[in-house]
Image 1 (cartoon, rainbow, N blue to C red):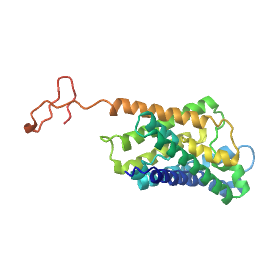
Image 2 (tube, rainbow, N blue to C red; image 1 turned 90 degrees about the vertical axis):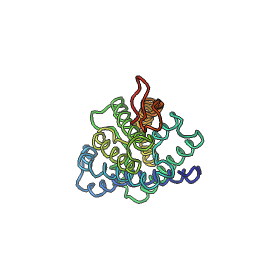
Image 3 (cartoon, rainbow, N blue to C red; image 1 turned 60 degrees about the vertical axis):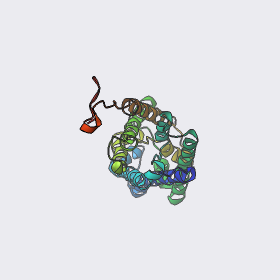
Image 4 (tube, rainbow, N blue to C red; image 1 turned 135 degrees about the horizontal axis):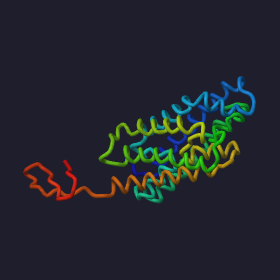
Length: 263
């Protein structure tokens, strides 16, 4: 992995830009296509239900591709909540975490600005530039819990596939992480937008000036990411393996009494 902050930060910028440009852009594109046929106060709910699978796949594929492409450079966070998980478990230096957060929020803003320039006012109005929103009947506390739980899933998978040396194969970490984003949106898309990423929410919110219940998409993902990281780190990464006591020439790693075998 390249440890140059500039190179790693730029990889985070490109990956986060891709997520917001493709993810929020997919919502805008579908809004543009369907806008002539949708009228009335229920337009947003109708649009969300009709296009859920497409939006979920757009976000999931964007993450899967970018994690696979530059994960070896920066770790493929593309999400301030993921970076926070690595920060609270002391797996990233504070100065580098600041670089990552700066690049992630800057990339989200740049992507949202480009989307605002590319799309017509009607599509932007209908979708609020892809800003996540609470669905009908979902209050802010329910939204907070949904974002927390869905982000917990995401960061748990990131640690299990990309951070744990004894976990899943790192060569498929991008696929697993991308699929987690997809399943998160399939469940939570109509409820909260399933941003599970403060940067994904921030860019469209800033450029569309849509701040209703905005704290939900910061408090939920940050709390869920930190909880998942701390739990996985404590349960599976911190306890050392038992030291073998069998003679090395036997080829058998015999554990001490009460310890699990390492073979």
